[in-house]
Image 1 (cartoon, rainbow, N blue to C red):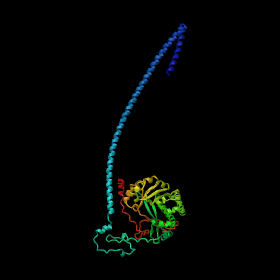
Image 2 (cartoon, rainbow, N blue to C red):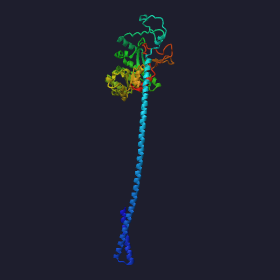
Image 3 (cartoon, helix red, strand yellow):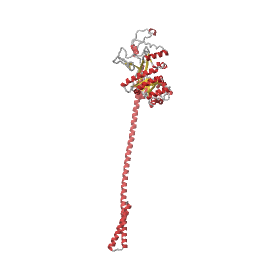
Image 4 (tube, rainbow, N blue to C red):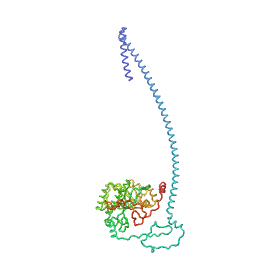
Length: 495
């Protein structure tokens, strides 16, 4: 822009000089040569003046720009210094805060250590009190020990008592020795008699369902029920599943039993879901039913009709059944899984488990005895430590259930294994279903041609129970504690 303006000014000066020469020539009569000299002189003077003025102007502008740049540099240096000062202040504050946090962390760590020591002392005291309460003699023994000496009583032998005599425990008084005679052993039956008895029980509808709850740990909230099958002979003696499954499978009767049990379990599940939608039922199915195409077709037709309840209905198989699956069994198992039914494995004898394969087959629960989980020998016999089994199974969507829990100490140890569910006599014993007593006098259900049944509750009539008690002696429940020891030991760890 400066060069263009300079050229433009030069052209203007040339024109002015030429005009000036013409004017002088016209006025004074100066010759053309002289007028040209005058014009050139004037032009030179004007060019010099323009150059000097332009140089002075450029110098003035450059001086102003340099001054502005110096002022901006000074401002920038002042801002950098201010930022440096602020950064130093922030660093000092961070350093002081870090020191304060370290002091606080050390203080909290010391308090936590003291609290842990107190909790350990509390757990030790509670465990000692539990041991003392467990070892404490029964009230009858204590009363007999502090009672005054009574006259000598003639010793009673087994020959003096009739074979059928049985004295109930609730009739024993503390001042006199109680006579307890073990019940008579069941008469031995051969396979033919046992098979005939099983057929009669099926024909006469003497198949009973016992329910045992599964609870969450450590809350002990009922989450599932396991249906256990029992048969009654013509004398109303209860026969457990371990006794009749073998002869029933040999005679090909397990399909009929499983079909009846499936029907009963579905009825129980429908009734339970009226009150609680989150409850579920475990129903056992024999391997013989899974391998028999005819009986399995009946079962799967029934399960297909009740497909809406599949998320809450779990089919349970033994561990050896899953390990010995053939092509037919695998196909039937896949058909059940396609209909939305989930599976559980019980009767676990070892911890050599492949969770990925089981999850692919539809297994969502594995029931392991508490004694097997807490057995130190399993650490060397299995590929994984029992304490890590629950976490391993959980990665594949399988829940671990500890069964046959009979004492509080087992619960305390299982909490360290991160077991979510528990089952056993500590929480509740298996209880039979009892017939309903509706207003119509207990009319049978037309769908099943038998009275509807529900969970047996404590009898309200002191003269007689609401259900017929099983003839086999009930297994005594171990002493239960309040559960404080479990919470205390869970806080202190396995030690």
